[in-house]
Length: 165
Length: 452
Image (cartoon, rainbow over all chains, first blue to last red; front, side, top):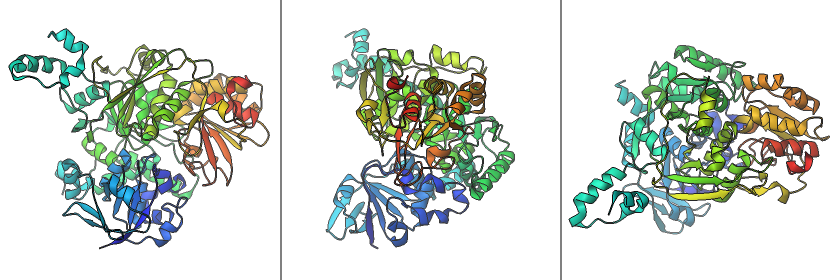
């Protein structure tokens, strides 16, 4: 499976991912976030993105507001993987919690250009750039975090902890 | 080698230990290994451990979980978890501050749902519209935040409470739901960066100017995942409101938390607000820091953060003549009583320049009332200001003062990202209340010392 890279710069803040004016009652109908994802920064994104595509950022991706609506907006477009040089900490946690894979890879962030075709080989632990024929490793996911992901996210983790079926 | 020498040279802990000396050194190392920062000590206490190490993942008990109207989302996650009560109804605090009074039908529906959740989950500390204010101001004001606590909340500026010597950090809605369910949180122990300030602040230079300067120096990811610890004689002499401002903006440098040791100033603030006992923690002199910065504030000038980053900082005098359409004074960063007094000191007997919309947002109902009693509101109204209820409103481009295409504002808030206060082609400058008030009078950005 391969998808196109949507390349963004450094310090992409969560206001740029989904502006504050769309936050009122956002998770009553989270699918409504899709049409406004990156609305001010890249208005074509919401129209053209496909479910196989990747969001690729620079350093400190997702800085600013703690709004969980930001990773959810990206998830609602169908995108499943975000690659960045580094992530802001609240955004990174939110990605884990909403089931969006956030891969930290300075090499991929530096090497990937907008529009490159990408794939991820989870078994080998590499991101492949099919356009340039390069491969990039990514920072392994901490075991504790992997445990939450394996359970299916934080909601499932809490249910397991509390013995709720 | 004496223990005293080891204390004086904490870096000796990192030196490889020859086998023959192992037993002796291991004993000494164990003794001094307890040297820790305030953040590490609070987290160790919350994890039921003697010590924690930066980088390790721990599970910490939380003493409070906070939220606001947008955190209605967390209750929906709690329902998905099939959790029908919170871990402790006295340790969950909610207020309505972002989209109140409801500007849209979505906001009205959200507030209606939140009120129902508050009732369903029997949340004790709920500050409904007209009875509270902005989360980061109302909870300390009501004595609900105390030194040594671990506080989490689904708002990135939750780090504000570090001003009272608490560990506090922002999270997303699902994390907050998990914290409300379990009363605990997994987190990576942050390493700490020490910011030591010396010297006396010049007139009309404030905590806001200190934190803008600091973020300007280290950048928006300069403290990513780290604890920012603020100390030194300037901090010891700094009023509590300025300390809240400084810790509030730690997240703008990417920090997990900002923190100041609770001292006589913090205790004076807590006096009369709480009778609940609390633990105070302080950093050991030989605690390990990832980095240390020392700033002398003696010649610090009023600063502004220019569009579109809180780290794009310059002294006000270096960016003269930026014409303004709007001035915002308030928010969780600078909406406390001393902020309003500072603005009133500039605005007394003056008027906002023609073409400038001046908005004042006291941070809580109590601050609003205090400002009425002190005559500050009268000064603002006579200066041509519109007074807002205690809400976040324009700060996040929500309501009550959005900017149009091409408009420019100066604001005492904390973010100036593209489109933060409205249109993507609008521009926001961040400053202290003195600078914002002076700029309202001038009609363009100006050093407050030129107006008074």
